[in-house]
Image (cartoon, rainbow, N blue to C red):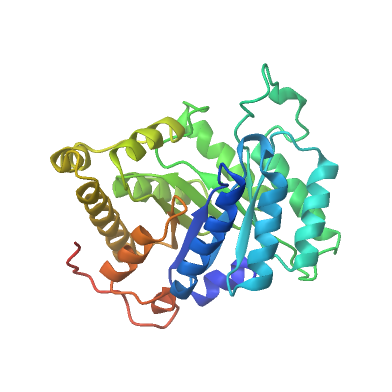
Amino acid sequence: MHITDIFSANRTTISFEFFPPKSPGGWESLYRTIRDLEPLKPSFVSITYGAGGSTREPTHDLVVRIKNTTSLDPVPHLTCVCHSADEIDVILKRYAEAGVNNVLALGGDPPKNLENYQRSQDTFQHGKDLVAHIKRFNESGLHPDPRGFGIGVAGFPEGHPATPNRLQEMDYLKMKVDEGADYIITQLFFENSAFLDFRDRCALAGIQVPIIAGIMPITSSQGMRRMADFAAGTNFPARLQRAINRAGDDKAAVERVGISYATEQCQDLLNNEVSGIHMYTLNKSKATQEIYANLGLRDTTGLQAGSSPAPSDISSS
């Protein structure tokens, strides 16, 4: 389903993100996790690349497999890094032929296995350039949907680490939307006030596409530290850190804290009529399933347009 149709059908979308496993055997395990979450009927699921497109073929194979063997709508990531225009076209043609309707266009992380890698060598220097290229592909008529691919881009509620100037950062985001982006998915955050302020700043900048909030439940103390590494600039509130510290070495307790905190975030976002919630699953199903249960949802259809709203008060474990 095209992303514009997904937003039309849902008062609030809930989607999941998965990342490439490090080992060949991990791909089958990831597929089982995806099937475990399928009964929750997410609005869509996104599949990331490794740095520099290092998992390009396995990612493409998984996307097509999800499209062909599940009821889910897969949204593959595409990156500027390490890709020529011709390579992007090959990928887009394959996805179009498989009936994939949406993509997420990102700058991407530089490959760690290539020393002294120069971004200046890339065909697409910025996310807006990749968006514009996908838009041109859409206009070629090669996708079975006359609208072509729905195009998503990234947003950073607490600031993009490469753009300290927050006003300029918003100008760059507006450029991506003006080039043809249909929706925005944000970097993870733990303070909803940061997201709500970001949403207001987008409105002031004339950005009118749906903005989906990125939520990642903490499932371990080590995981929180890893998040701090790859989500540079993300604030970890003192109240969250205190709760994690109280749990100490009790891994189950840390997981309960993380799930409870993420549940509170999601409930508040729903009360603030967010366009969507994007859950970074860490390729696991338990936390996502428990958050749904805490929200009083059997599946995402409970948030479809015209359905009863989620409860405003919850008791999370």
